[in-house]
Amino acid sequence: MIGKAGGQGANLVVLPMDRLAPEFFQLRSGLASEMLQKFVTYRMRLAILGDFAELASQSGACAISSTSQTWAGVSGSFPAWKN
Image 1 (cartoon, one colour):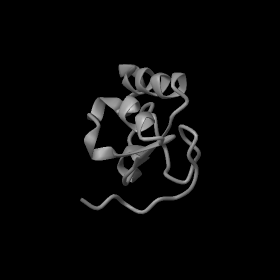
Image 2 (cartoon, rainbow, N blue to C red; image 1 turned 90 degrees about the vertical axis):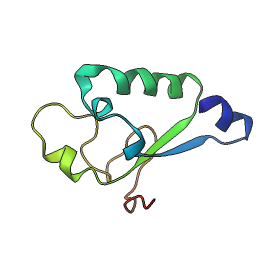
Image 3 (cartoon, rainbow, N blue to C red; image 1 turned 120 degrees about the horizontal axis):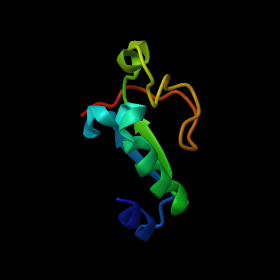
């Protein structure tokens, strides 16, 4: 994904949250940090779009708490992803 985006001249990858495994959002799994480190290494920004309200309300550590916060170099509020 990073290579393909970079080959097209992009510096941002937009990914709908429903394409990620639920474990991605659990910090203890290490999936988010592993993936995000690759984006940082290749100087590529990542935006994950979706409704994070359910994740933010769950107890325990969550990689994302709100779509209005800065995360992975992208800030702002985004509408829910429509397939």
